[in-house]
Length: 221
Image (tube, rainbow, N blue to C red; front, side, top):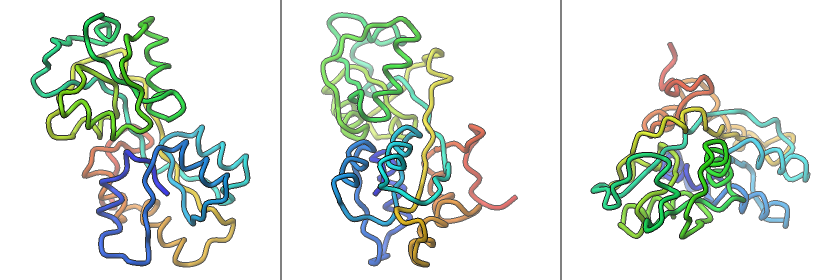
């Protein structure tokens, strides 16, 4: 189970591996599914809070490991039809504004950033995952929204400088559902936790940052 913002990375890492079945959705949805009894071997969430929830609910027993960081950015369609120039424009009437729902990591992060900036957004849609929000922006259905830097790479999107967002980012955590994962499950975890692994390379390729907020190291130094 992996957060929706990791969809492209997961596709690369597990291409051709029939033994692995990815389930992609918003982190909070995945954690709720685990709590309801859904079967899974590995969980990757897009922030610490959802992983902590999975641990506290007894859905995850392995030790969570931080594998990457993703920053929040202000995105618009490529031609910026609303003439968005900064974060304050999210409160401007007449623009179509999209955010992630507050119960998912990108939405929680966006709300915190906007609250700290003193901006009350004129929100037209709240999406349950960041990929859906990025898609609506790229199709021109919205004028602006807050997405992860990696999702802003979606074709048809542009970003607008927003210094207020520079310190707003989420960490991605991976953990085994079992306290003693089988060898093949441990191998999946190592795909993301070992320096120079296929997961580290894929995270680097899609613009994720390391825990020190530098690009994830794609190869051993």
